[in-house]
Length: 498
Image 1 (spheres, rainbow, N blue to C red):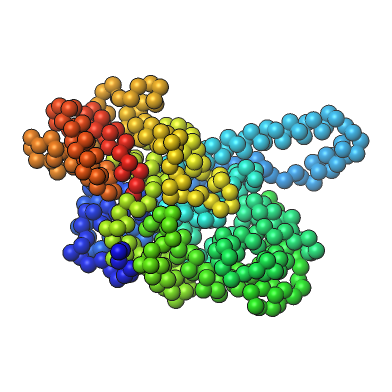
Image 2 (cartoon, rainbow, N blue to C red):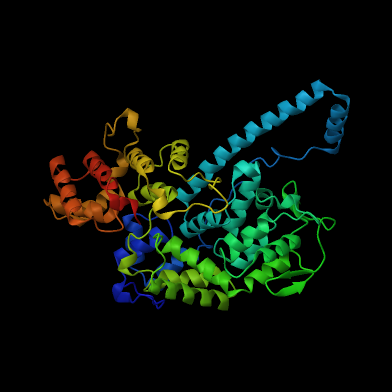
């Protein structure tokens, strides 16, 4: 059975395998040199290298990288002109406004495409992998989709907010999400007002964001919470509390009574033990084991202990993450290869771990969509199901083709192999394969390539098949022969796991 202990992993159990596991789960993998560097540290220092990332330089996003004015509100003069045209039936003016709306629709779609590529590039290049990994986690947790929001800049603002608080304080995130223009629009809270409260945001706060489905609340609690959230809206890019729309009457929520508003509601939800248990359960599934079955007893013990720690730390995330990443539980061999790579993990890890060029970001962004993970567009407010849901006959084909594209630079219709040895293949990964292989031993070179590619050992039959493939290549495992071997390695079922 897996070890439920949150006690730190002892130094004697720390090495390359543990360091690689940490880099993959708390980030997107690393080069052989990065793995070796972490393995040479004390476990606590290695974990802190990932968690205490604020001192690591990062490229700031220029203020004008994305256009905040595409979805700007109409000016007072424009609104008056439009109202007059509608009153007078002035088709020429109405058509002009419609053309401008269509133009802005196209500009916003184009900006979303650019934003997807920008975030993907950031994940590939970042020196703060945990920051981006947690931003991705919160994007799936507080799931918000552009097709409903219809404002790419609001999606960018939400992404920036999640990054700023990625490993900070869950309470801060909860208070900010009820002020986030993208979320307020996505769940229709901008239309919620006294006498006509909209229940969407209140329901999802309890069911999906803070407490978890069916955890201690009733339909009446949801209705009363919706009243508390009335008047929480936005204007242009900023949160606005509309006192005229707010229901300031007394509410009864989860056994507490008072003239509550949205902040009071969040405070009530955070006071419930179900909150820390729910969030720690999701963190465990994201970082430790995403299997479809109910968590085993040892995993439940670990989650319960993490939840207790989260409450003691008043929802500060770093102590929870540090304890988890350093624990015997996290590093238990039972959890190696227990997470199915998300499409983002597959793409970014292939680049960061194997050292391939990123190729064309537009192509990779399209591949992510085909594999079921379109950035800024989760399938629903529940986010992505993850786990085995990532894999089916269609996505598996695309996942392999994407790996081959990264390795060779060739799309399926243009031929599988590169026409000449890519320089990257003789870089860190090629040197590491050569260093781990005994001179003249083809099988040792094959085993080294598998060790550097996979998070879990392949079954013996597949290892022997891979060795036979490498033998048939002839010559040292370098240059184009290494690329061919890696294409075969990424086709193994084990490559889909991390």
